[in-house]
Length: 372
Image (cartoon, rainbow, N blue to C red):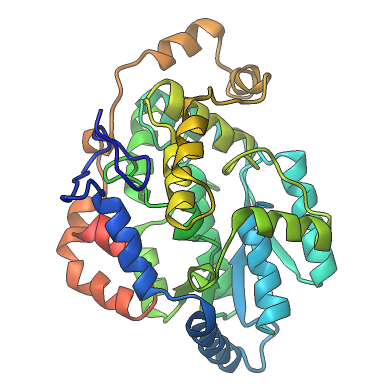
C-alpha cells in the first residue's frame, strides 16, 4: 500500500494525491496553512492586533468575547491564553449534552475558578438528546457526534447575542488536530433535522439546532469567529503538562474523549466505518515535529483502547437491547448524500460565504469544504 513519505495517510484516504516525491496533498495543505497562519513573533503580533479589536468592541461591557469550553486540552489552554496572555475578559460557554465525563466537569470547574472566568451553560434535556442520538445511529451515518458540534456552535452564537459580544473564539488547532480527509464528515442543521424526521420519535424542542436563516442573521450582525491557537507554537504534550502544573487539570485519555458520547463516536468510526482518527492526529503531529513518522506508524498498529463499560452505557442510556444494538452496528453504512442537507444552498451562497470568510465570520475550512 502506498503511504505518504511525510505523514501516515495512505492511498485509501479519500481525495489523496501524491507528488513526485511521494508527499500527499494534505501535507501540502498543511504547509499552505502554516504560511497563512504564522507563529512566533509574527503570530503574536496577529494575536495582539486581534486582542486590541476585541477589547475595543467590548468596551463598557461585562465580557468582550465568548469561548467554548469542554474540559479538553485546547479549550482549557485557550482560556489561559485569552485571560492571562492577552488580557481579555472572556465568558466561558458550554453545551452540556449530559454525557460529560467526571474528568471534563472537574477540568472546567478548576480552570475557570483559578482564572476567575464566568460560565454560561446550556443544559440539554437528557431524553431529547438521547432520542436524537439514537436517530443518528439508526441513520447509519458516521457523524453521530454532529449533534454536539452543531449545538455548541449554536450555543456560542446564542451567548454572543445575549451578552452583546462580537467575538467568538474556539480552540481548534490544525497543527494538532490535523486536516480531516475530504468526505469523511459532513454536518449541518438540515441534515440533523432530516434524520430526526425519518428516525426520531419526537420533534426537536430544546435542541439548539443551527438553522440557516438564524445563522445568517448572526453573521450579518457582525459576530466574528477566531481561532487564536492557529498563531501559537502549540505542542500538545507541553500544553498538557503546563495545564496540569498550573491548574491541576487532568488528562482524559485520548483525542476528544472528555465526553462519553464522543468517545463512543470514535469507537463507532473505527469499528463500523473503518476510520481511525489516530491517523489524522498523528499525521498532524508528524508535520509539526511532535512525533516521528516511525513512531506514528507503530502507534497506529496498536488496537485502540476504550472504556470497558462504554458499550453497555450506550445501550442503557439509549434504551437499546443487545439484539437491536447488533442490528444497528450491521446496518449498511450511509452518508450525508442519503439525506437532506443545506449543501446545495451553501454552494448557491458561495459568494456570500466567501465574504464571510474574508470578514472572519466563518472559518476558512467551512468555506472550502462546504461551499466549493
